[in-house]
Amino acid sequence: MKYRLRRLIVALLALIGLGVMISQAPDLWQQQAAVQQPVVQQATGAAADVLATIEVKGRAAKTGYTRTQFGDGWATERGCDMRNIILHRDLTDVAVNEACKVLSGNLNDPYTGKLLPFVRGADTSDDVQIDHVVALSNAWQTGAQQLTPEQRIALANDPLELLAVEGKANQDKSASDAATWLPPNKAFRCQYVARQIAVKKKYSLWVTSAEKDAMSRVLATCPGQKLPT
Image (cartoon, rainbow, N blue to C red):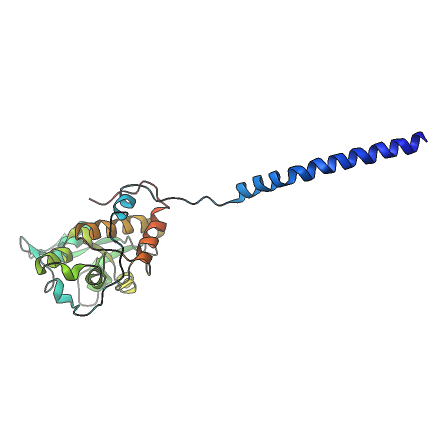
């Protein structure tokens, strides 16, 4: 009789314990779900703040776009054209001739992360090219049609808009925006996007919805990203 009573007490205690576990199970599940929920990072910093002020619109038609809408080649300053000015700025160990032409140097390419030698010549000059960070055709389709010819020439020759980069990477990018192309060198993507934002803000260009989303995702990986000066 005592043995049966003891078994009954043990069974009752087990049932009570199971009931407590069941009653607590929703709370435990909610706690586990909260722990497993991914944390969504938000873009912060000057670049993100300025991006938030840029108008979002669809692309305008490309009708009427030609490179000459942005000037007939490179502008010159004090006898030096902008291509050579940017090469001189972005390369190291630079050799320049008396005609203000960069003859050689080394480029720490921001787009690929490679160290590239530059040697002026018919077969080698294109190994390093000057990229318009906001592609000119993209600029045309996001507001540059509304700029004056003088403003478009200023945009195309603005050091803020220009970077010396690997020729192949420049060709791969072509007319892409941030939604369709980013530098293979992930360490440079935040600076790249910040520079595009700075150019678009300076020349009153807009961004597409996809472009803004892509820029925001990049900036979320580098809190506090500043704009280039």
